[in-house]
Amino acid sequence: MYRSTRETAENKAEELRREAQRKGEDVKEGWFNWLGYGKSKVSDAEQAARERRYQLESDADRLKREAAKGVANAAEDVRVRAEKHT
Image (cartoon, rainbow, N blue to C red; front, top):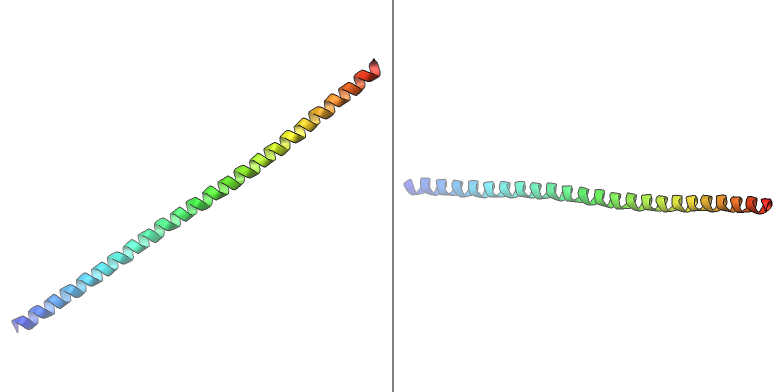
């Protein structure tokens, strides 16, 4: 009877250890999934920031060209007026 009770207790203890280990692995997997989710969100945000910076740089270049064209047109107007008065 002692041997049977002991085997039953050892078997139950082993079953509980395996279950605890499995639950620990589940928790770890959930934690790593959560970390991976956070990393992917950071990567998405970095990509969006790069795209926005590129768009702003393109817009800035376009505005610079438009401003330069405006200055060139104004300079041409001044030159034409100066030629009329000379």
